[in-house]
Each structure stands twice: as structure tokens, then as C-alpha cells.
Image (cartoon, one colour):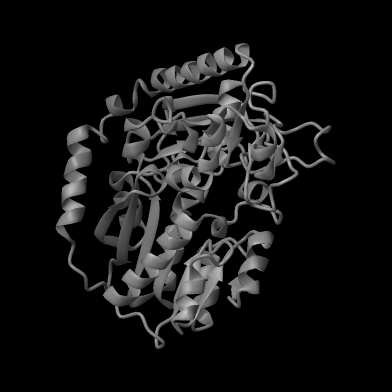
Length: 408
């Protein structure tokens, strides 16, 4: 395989998670007795541009299908994050009723609803029909398609260049990252800005966040790699923030490299120096990760087998992609984790891909009174612990598996 950015031959394996189905391909009562498609889940690192990337096995249209089950609005933490972002960005860059905002991967309108509430013209681009319909129900215009240079040129000809382009947690999800970034440089007005949020590869490595690896994530991003990709496709990074979301993310502020007016901030220079000092432009930084994540898997299995030997019950909270990666890499099935609770109606009554563990309503926790609840979306643990604090009434405890097993 060649690097999806610079086309250099990929020779170095970052991590090999064996194989699994796509993490959001939930099974139904109808499909539970049918075969599943399992694909290798192997991540490589380019030692020329330092883009970390999955091997190509699954097409985007198969993973982001019309019944896609991830709806951002079911997390109060994420809604607050989106609302705070809109307040900050509109104030800092004077985005108002005379502006035009577009969000790429608008999902269910979780963010654009706050833009719309301010009377700012906006529209979203979203390829999955299920989430696009939910956004439309909020009164938001949605173009139901994958974003590309072709789509950007169509919008340009239609007079829909934007003052602000928002791309939160989508850059890692695009198979043709050059086409995606180039499209943004086309759709952006001469003095417009684009912001991107994505999990920082540095945290993935340092905090053993291997469960954020799944087929839908084609790329795992550092500032080092993103700067190269943006420069090659007409964008220039002028500011950056380090966020706590998704276990540690970056918010990148970019402008057109030909006409942008913003001066590069010290934050960009400081973070690039930090990555250089830690060796993110050296292949040795990426070695040894496999051994560390196998240790996490062994800790999980040792704990689970001991608990089951004692006749106690383990369940999961959050039918998230993280949980699917963790359970499929560990070989866990319903005999270990009895069920997984999730708030999303789109997931209830279905089954986790690979492990086939049933996804149920939260009321099952009150009915079965489990001894341990594994919080798979550990990035939302504070919200979840507060929501489920009633399990303390019967001595129930929470379990976090990343960066290492911890009982709360």
C-alpha cells in the first residue's frame, strides 16, 4: 500500500488489531443469524510525511450507509461542546447574519442548530441519510453527499462559498484526504476560515487509546502530518487549541494559503516543537505500541474471567465504536459482557458487530443490578457516571479500561 497523502511506499506497521467488522455495522434480529464481513484492522505509518493510516479494505459507502447509527445529539457533553464552539467562533471572527457557514459531516444537526438559532445562514453536508433526516427535522438544509473537490466546485459555481467551514471529527474519516482538504480550500472565501477537530495522535500513543482505531478512521493525525497535507492542498494553519474531547483533540484554524490574512500563532509553533521533541518525525516513536495494547487486553480479560468465576455480572455502557474495537480485539462475547446499554433509539434492540452482544435500554440495569459496568466511551465517563450513580445502591462499580484498567 502507498501513503494516501504522499504516495510513498508504506513499510512500517504501527499496530495490528487482527480483524473485525466495521464498528458501526450493528446487527438486527433479522441479520443476527447471517454471516458478517470481517476485515483486517491494521494501521501503518508513513516515514516520509508521518501520516498514520489504516490499510484500505472497506469503502466509505459501506461504513457510512443510510442507516448509520451514530447520532451526536445523544451526548449532552457533546452538545455543550458544540454550543460553546459556536459562541466562541462567531464572536472571534465576527460571523453574523451576513455570513455563510457550512459544516461538513453535519450529522444530526447537533452543531448547526446553534448557528441557525443566531440567525446565521448555514447548511450542512452529510452523507448518511438517517442523520441527515434528523438534521432536516431541525430546520437545517442538508446536502446528502460525501464532500469532495467535485462537490466544492459545484457549490462554488452556485455562489455558495463560505466564510466559515466547520469539519469536526471528520478529517480522520475520509479515505481521500487530499481531495477533501483541497475541496475545502476551493469552497472557502478568500478571507474565510476553516476549523477542524480531530483526536491527537500523540494522546493515542501516550495513553494507549487503541480503541479509537477502527475502519471508519482512515487516518490518525498529528500536527506534523496535517501541516504537510494542508500545505500541499492550499491551506495554511494559523492557530491551534488543545482540547479535552475524545481523550485529547486538536482544534485547527486554517485559511487559504494564497489570500489568508491571519498570522501564525505561537501555539502552532509550540506544539510543532513539542511533537518534534517527542520524536513524532522518527519511526522509533511508533514502535512498541503493539506490546502496550496487548497488556491492556490481558488486564481486561484477567479481570473479566475472575469476576465471572465469582458469579458476578459485567455489562457495558455505550454501544460505541470504542467498545466494538475493545471487545473484538479481546475476543469478548455475551458470556463475558451480558449486554450493552445505549441511549440511542437507533441502536436499541440491535447487536454489537462481531461480539453480537445485545444492545438494550437503560432499564435493564435496574432489572439485573449488574456488579460492574464497563464505560466504553471513556471520554464521556463523567457524564455517564453521573447518569448512573444509582448503581451504588447495590454496590455496583464502574470500570474504565483505557489507559489501564481502573475500578471506580
